[in-house]
Length: 178
Picture 1 (cartoon, helix red, strand yellow):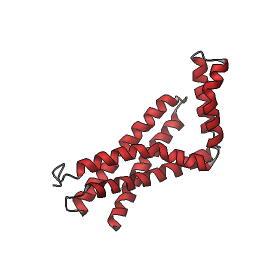
Picture 2 (cartoon, helix red, strand yellow):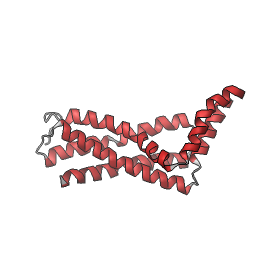
Picture 3 (cartoon, rainbow, N blue to C red):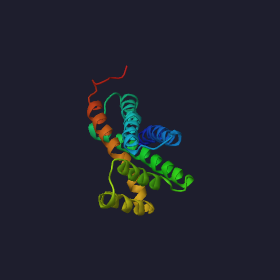
């Protein structure tokens, strides 16, 4: 069990660090913020960085389990890696928000407003479209809302990668150890 936890910690730290480093670099280096494009970019980065789930499960199977691992144990390790990466993601995101005086949500909502206005939306239609975002702006100030919301951004991607990795790697003939 100690090795299981070590694999989860190592590969979760690697995965979470890659995700947050690339996403924060993109935010800091961007001249302007395109939230639609950045959302797709963010999920692509998460998917790429979560290859550490596959690598971690495979290494655990090959090195510690003699080349054999059941679906449940593989999925458990994948979810543990996801949890560690998610915690890293949340903690670093919170540090970033604090360092930038929590400006992200204002920039996000204002960017969407500008995009809708540039598309010709005005008046009551704009107010209706922006109402949920204005509510989110208020809720985002509450850490009990923001922390789980931030974790939920990353968790589904990790879940999918963990499921696929566990399904593939439970077969000892799939990419066997050399």
